[in-house]
Image 1 (cartoon, rainbow, N blue to C red):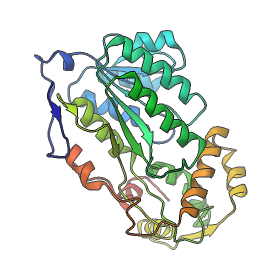
Image 2: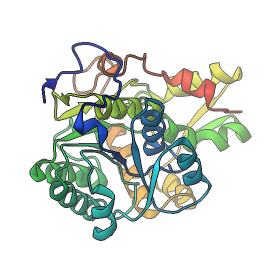
Image 3: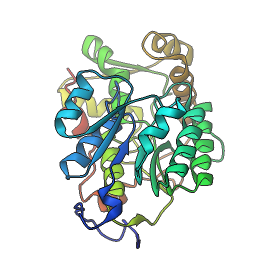
Image 4: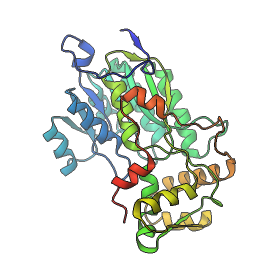
Length: 320
């Protein structure tokens, strides 16, 4: 199969009946989607819209999975921490999308999935990872992703890693309530000049879909996906512009944020995000530095669609 460099031109993939690889179902994990991001659901729906056969691995059979079935997905109920159900899901699969929630179990799930993918002869695994362009890992979860990527590489399953920063959806979850109730963003993001790289889940899903749907194999092992690099002041200004009223940013301590977040998300996610905020706050990256740059052009070349801006996301997000 000819290698394809997606940065050379945009394309509009179509399934080819004569192509044996593309006639196999594409496995998508996390297909039902979660509270934030839901890239697995986005990839599933996009592939189905393009006419590709999709095998959707879901943790529970519910209204969300029923919708995927109605769209034409083959459903498999399973658990990425269960070797037997993972092997079943990957049987006869040549291409797969792997994502794991911000919770305990990433290393185990990756190892199980990589082994099963190798056994089944999978040729391409698109893996949702995290940014890796700093010498030190910002958090334990980020370190796990760096190690998990190596596991996929060693398994020789054609792994391609989507190195993504926090999603726009994460920012919305952090600020929606306080903005609605107090016109204020309470975050431990410093004095206002630190940069926080961001991307929309929709664009991550589009990139994954493009890689999985193309008949050729990707020419790169990893793609850094950053669309915007706003400061917290620029984020508050963007929210204010969308809502048409002043929005304040008030700095809080890491401890205050962790205590509040612990009421909404699991301990693993609290630990990861609290370390991530501290890392970006103390990294002292400023506008125009090479360590972080927007890859919107590369995303556009991969997908053929202009990436979503933070302002566009907030306009569609239903903030009030």
